[in-house]
Each structure stands twice: as C-alpha cells, then as structure tokens.
Length: 144
Image (cartoon, one colour):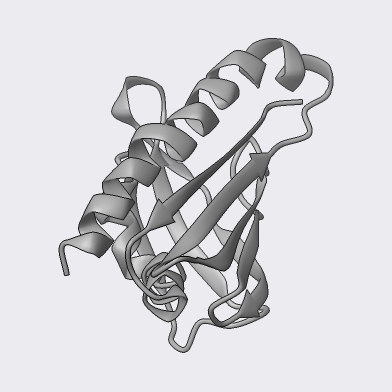
C-alpha cells in the first residue's frame, strides 16, 4: 500500500497554517499536480472539492475529494472519491515553540491490477506531496 508521512514546522500560528491548507484555492500554489480545483464555500465536514490533477502525458484526471474532518487549528482530513486511485489524507496541526508542527499523511489501498500498475507512480506522487510540495507550502505561508 502506498503511503507517505512527513512533519514540518511552520513559523506561523496554527490558525494560519490550518487556514492555508484547508482552503482548496491554495492547492495549485503548492501542489504542482493540481490542474483545476473548485469548491462551494464554506469548507467543512462533508464538503466535496472538485479537482483535476495531471496524469500521464499531462492529461487531466478527475480526483474529487470529500472533507472527512475539519477541526480548525488541529485537524483536516479528506478522502478522494473520483479517479483511478482513492487515497486518504490528513493534516494535523500542533503548537511548536512560536510556530506550528504540521504533519501530512497520505495512504492508498490498491489491489489487483491497480496494485501492479499504479503502486509505484502513486508512491512517487505521495512522496512528492510530502516533500517538495510541503516545503513549497511552508515557504508560501511563512512569506505572508
């Protein structure tokens, strides 16, 4: 099963970090695979976020997700509900000195032919989200 997790410290209050990550409009700024994203405000438990991500050859793949937890300044989680792979993800926020410790965890259960064909590319994508993309989000949040 592909999975990835990483914790970083962002030199901003938890409320600011949470607001950034829970606002779908920010995703294209830090997640390079996002081609399109839209949501009906306000975001909360049960909200559906429509997104298209870059797939093989740059073609768009639907990857809508549903918000599963929305606990301001502490937890934001989601599950993908459209597309070939349906990962789940969670952001956790905790005070750390004058900043906020942010943990992003992702996982996807794959079986059968999907496991054979998609496990490696899904793992690569997840690794990118919790590494370079998370670093980019940190830089964006700290620059405001």
